[in-house]
Image (cartoon, rainbow, N blue to C red):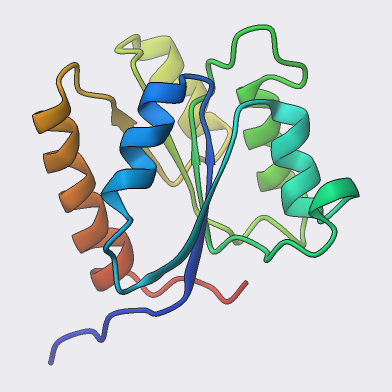
Length: 149
């Protein structure tokens, strides 16, 4: 029996590169499952969003977080955001997918040690990025049942 597609999924993307953020946003523009893709470029803004603080006080809680842990000049860092999301009982059930250009084993291990749900390496070209996002959609939006927001 096929798993039904989820509907109205809210995704928070924490990404400092505006081109990568736009690629991700564009990839979900025609998705029937995704209600909103919100992009933030800093650790503080990401935490404000998930805690629904400040300008995000009416934002929907995300069902899924896509995080580049290598946020330049950001405090808290992307790894700090991952650590907080996974240590806060109200937020720990939200799947966090690390999406990064790093191929370093230390980054991979650090992400999983902080309880990332998956580690994906960003491809260098847009076509490969589209293929990665298609696989992401098939798995996270079709095969997996996400926790409610």
